[in-house]
Image 1 (cartoon, rainbow, N blue to C red):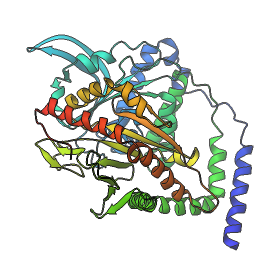
Image 2: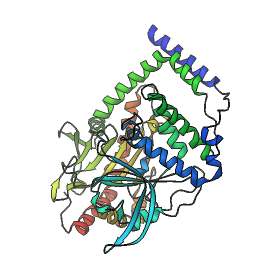
Image 3: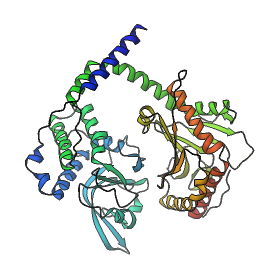
Image 4: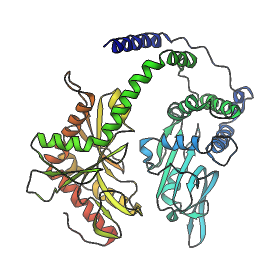
Length: 467
């Protein structure tokens, strides 16, 4: 008890001192600002940032970071990008700037453009990045909809994924092409660059660290960011002063969170069973089976998959199939990753701050980004043709998003009562979402089911029945 009292006192002191950090001196001007590189021409600024960012991202360059900065950027991409690539091994990644993108018809180039950055594993996946500071977007629609070749290679050669990102100023319009994920320079600095510097400055060559810091300042200068930052040095000193208290509570919570990510499926099933909605069925270590208390086979059995620290998958048995044998029902990614799936999900890792800070749980219905592009497009078309019907079936907390992947979203408050933990409250909210969207929404599940199987038949010319 005494240890907890001491811990609480330390945390109160930390909070008081943090609130006092309000006066921020102006930072010295960056080198680029002094030589007026950014002031003479926005085009010059874009070229400068483009080349420097490509240098830092390329594991082959002699900056001493190997693939660590690239991994941090890929891991920090916005949710909208739907980047679903294993980034543990980046040894085959190629980073290029000013890459030609072409529309080729019958061997003849009809039109072309130059994309600022291309990160790729040839014949597997690519991430196309367009950088903007003030110029208008004129190319993203062409890159996504018309272009057939990237860097001289057909887009169709990239079997694992094709991803598109538009990096721009916060006060400028988003990309013309809705399938480009939008990311602001402010978000890039706050979510990736500055945390990367804070955590790794002592590990890398001093010249590289200084270049990254200068790069950070230059982006702020070019993009006209005016929001003052909290005094970084005071924050560091405050962190060091209360390191033991911060580490204690953080490590304890992180351990509990990790355990929770491994067991939320079983806990959700048991909560639903407690409330009389069905029964938990044994399945495997990563998947909890749940059988609805109904004779309606249209809705079928459900699966809660807990194999990821981020993606919490909730799907009807049969909504995940192997493309080469569509009668084959899956419950995890096929070894060759040649599968087609839809389902509900909640993001544990990506939405952790939302759950903890705002006490909000978002549950999505998703047309998976790793599906074949033809399936994605036809599923979207079929869904959109029935939006009026689907909208009438949604519970009050849910809405149609209008985007091609997370097509529905439902937000639930995580209400922590005096006699329960945060994790208990999270499960109760997830339970409420499943009841709203599935248990008490036979019609919604039926519509999604119909669209899934109709799209499979249209794309793959195979007729299968809902299980």
